[in-house]
Length: 266
Image 1 (cartoon, one colour):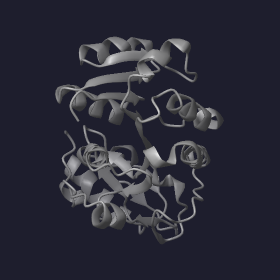
Image 2 (cartoon, helix red, strand yellow):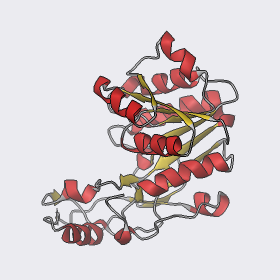
Image 3 (cartoon, rainbow, N blue to C red):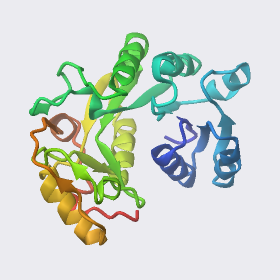
Image 4 (cartoon, rainbow, N blue to C red):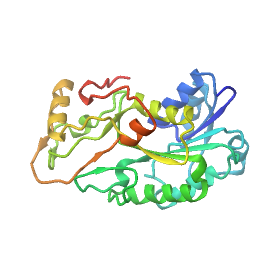
């Protein structure tokens, strides 16, 4: 891993965190942002910053050609129908031997009260799911053997927790399982893939603990001393994200295995 160069396209909440870690580990890291004001922040952290919105420009070709690993950590929210084309356009600029990780989402699976595994049909119905599914397919078609897709569950850590957004609100259902993953494990899974050369695959990443939403968010809001959400009991379908492939085949050991014990400040 010595003298490797990393590229993080999308230095948001997760992307910036892992880019900082790689810089601290002594690697050369290039990172992108869609916010001009954030370029100084990236540079201050030792990240070689680039302004990249929805189109790869000729001036980007130079740094992309230097990469050994490309982390695609861009949400589809602003790109929408152009999401897949954008990710492919970035990936096709890197060297032929460079490896690619796409951060996807478990929203690619519909809610059918099932245990969702990686070989299931991708039929998610959330607003962004069709764009994520299309991007996965486009990248697989072109880069399969040097690509790994990590489907992350809901992200928590660094003061970020969905309980804060649900606080005091009326929420349907309550009996569905919770699927979350802490930032430290997000980074852990990404680095595990690279360290073990786990390419040409798709992997679910979710803490192996799935209490009901009502039980969990009631408890967490009480611990945070904020109003609990009010669950109305209306039936809602959910899903449980299976980690069997990640744990049993790829031998990843989770840092956090109990959602009640997650550190929210790290």
